[in-house]
Length: 389
Image (cartoon, rainbow, N blue to C red; front, side):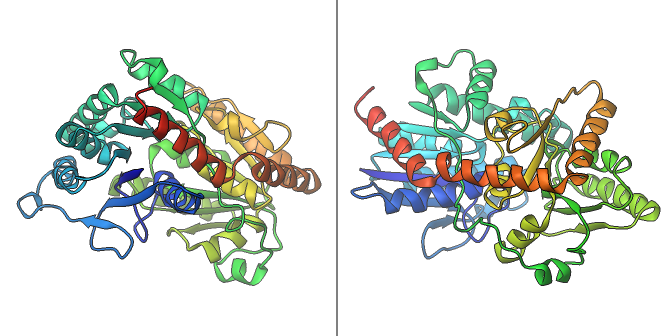
């Protein structure tokens, strides 16, 4: 079985959950006994472990969505000889669609997020969002199988694309490398990042995008205990305007209270893991999240999670056992911010309870979210599709 994986993100250019997923899934697929042969096709320059595709010369100044489709055309040509193509995110879905048509091979999509669930991109990308939405819809409706990363995501897929045959939509969850993400108590590394390891702190890790709900967390921070720290490990803003919005809110917050630290970078794992381990509570205030790998990474590090009860998050954060969930109503952001503040404060005030939740979270990760099992389930989908089922 020769599988072509197509993806925008591939190391060293990994900036989001989909990229993390692809990186670990490929490693797990390659490690399976008698597993499939895997070739990775990705955006970007040359790689030693993948075929990289640059933006075509005549599209250098084009809209970003057009650039992505241009790369997809070249990727599709490069997939000759594959038995099946597996695409990740709308950026690469068109490559899978075209490869399937041209080479007569099945196309499998993993649904990490959905363009109809991110309408704010229309404000950011204009016509690019119309193109990305068309590309995603066309690829999904033609795909031989769609893998949803959670049951909540499967529901979203079928709701967004009701013409899709439910029998073609399978659930194979996200995973986490529990060896790479494990409790590492290293206060010196935390201190070197500008964070006081002796002060209880809440931590956010993620991109600056409306989806991740950073502005709601900053609003909630006004209601946190005065002795609590808040650390934002937030970078890779979708737009300069969103970056500036966060910068202004952080500056205003820092003017009124101490212990607020903004690390505007996507940290390497050797720094990130001690930072997560040292946190009393890890916060995921997303307004949309098919699953959220960061929830698993925090749990694997033995840290309690406070998260919004959206998408697939309730399948990962066991409310009351491994963390606390907060209802999200887009029509009442003030109530959401207050709910976040109350739940975060609850765990900051009871570090023993937070630690017990963190320990339970790590136990659950080890039992349910290992990559080898996820790779095996993915191969089952490949086999079923290749058999015509």
